[in-house]
Length: 363
Image 1 (cartoon, rainbow, N blue to C red):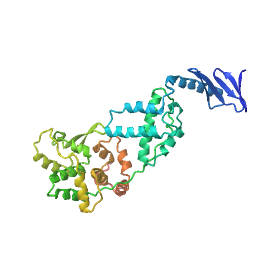
Image 2: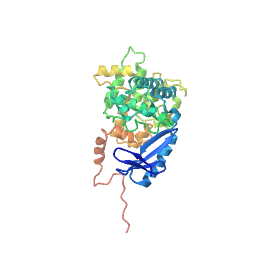
Image 3: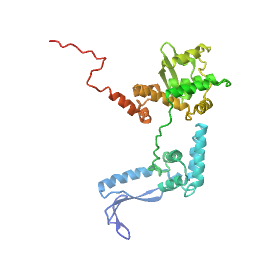
């Protein structure tokens, strides 16, 4: 029986491409691929399992394109960056910055072969920067995408970044105006006599808070999207590429009826002529001594208010165009749920609800 000598024990050949280390009984693979000898521990002392692991190892090695074994990190980055140029300009700009950092700051140099990159190299590269968790997660996620392209092309079998997890982000409770503050902000904007867009901006903000839609949803809304008879508003969320309908809420209808009466009423005419009212909101908050609320604050106010009014979370999720049955809202607005929970708990009494009619017992 042919053996491979070692200082401690010997490698005994027990099958085709299969060796057993005499000192601990662990099985090893020894194969040739494209003229190159590769050895790998099979991680077991069980012969049957070793045979299965050997077959899997051979199959994995056949998937590697040896002709691409010398592809460098810099080359891989350039190839991948060329495939994302169709994305949004800001996204391309961010990814270009990360590629530039990969090339200039990689611990072993950008000419390192992709097949030789180790998990430690990834951690060392991330440790070079003193950025926050969001930026770190962006860098890690993009690097994983680049390395995934190397897997897809058969350059490597597994990603050295696969085991590195993103930083878990804290979920802050962002400042949300009360309904009274919301009305004060809209009124303050409307009172600005020397502003050409004061009335339009005030209506825009009122719509956000009374409809619970986003700035993007609101700025693209046309009169054709409003069904007065069915009391619904149909909108399309470009971020998720989904369309959905929301009710024409009683608190919203007077605002839209007033604007419709003053418009041409054409179905393709936009409901609002402004796309945002950031400066108007900032000015109103400053005049009123309120926190610096944003467009999103009014949407949060709508959702918070709906939860506090006892509206079913699944229904609120549908109004927001969510398809998760309310999971996102429950996790994001967990600070509101205890209040709602206590209110619901007061209903658990021994008395029957008023809407239940007792049936007389028949003899």
